[in-house]
Amino acid sequence: MITINKASQRRRFGHGNFEVNVTFPGVNLNNPDDIGLLNLGRIDHAILKPGAFIGMHQHINDEILSLLKSGTMLHKDSTGKTVKVTASHLMMMNAGYGIFHEESIPTETYRQNVEMLQIFIRPAKKDEDPDVQFADIPMGEINKWRLLAGYATAPLIIRSEIYVLDVTINNKSIEIPFSHYPNSTILLYVFNGSIDLVEKYSLSKGDSAVITGNEQPLIYATDADVIAFVMNSDAVYTREGMFSGLN
Image 1 (cartoon, rainbow, N blue to C red):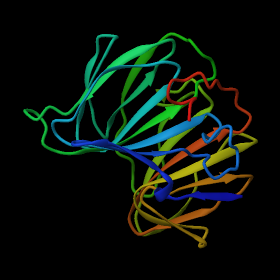
Image 2 (image 1 turned 180 degrees about the vertical axis):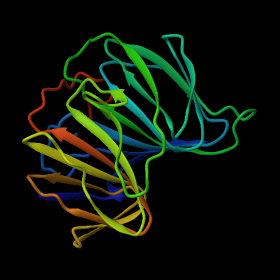
Image 3 (image 1 turned 90 degrees about the vertical axis):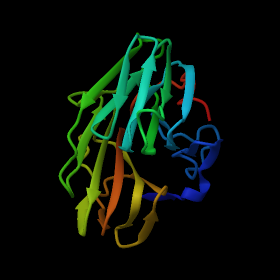
């Protein structure tokens, strides 16, 4: 089964040099008690312009992947780290019982807009020790999925049964990522461009598709960036997250 979420359904907020469009991935699954999708709470598609500053703020029980496609963002946190985050140097915050961080694009250093996803995932357990991870992940080959983060054996570790991959598709049809979970749910998010899914659905930037069952549909695009979330439909997770659990 395939369920489509349109970009027009996203919630928008921000002002000045900071704009966010929020996807709640389960919005069309007819579950009024939870418009997240299993352990995927929400996806924030953000554009930050030079001069943007999001001051020190707290996260609790969120697993947060920052996935940039352009620009450089400066990250500071309460563990003492100050790190540049880019499209090939990615960050994962495992907030646990609490972590503070801030994000900025200092105008004296950076001139390019940042376009990114900040992905809020529900951990398997609440109140674990906080951690911040960074990984150098080379840009992937065209038309091949790049593994970014996951529950195990991934460059960035998520404390929840989910894997995150991305791909740039250019004039080709490719399969969705393989799932080793016997009962899986996959969400595809169009970051840039547009795609055709199983020659039936046309999705544009900001659209997403929830795929359940054993389907292995083909994705075709002339030029598009796509993010995939592969989830264990039977995963255990907590909704105690400050952002991932509440919607």
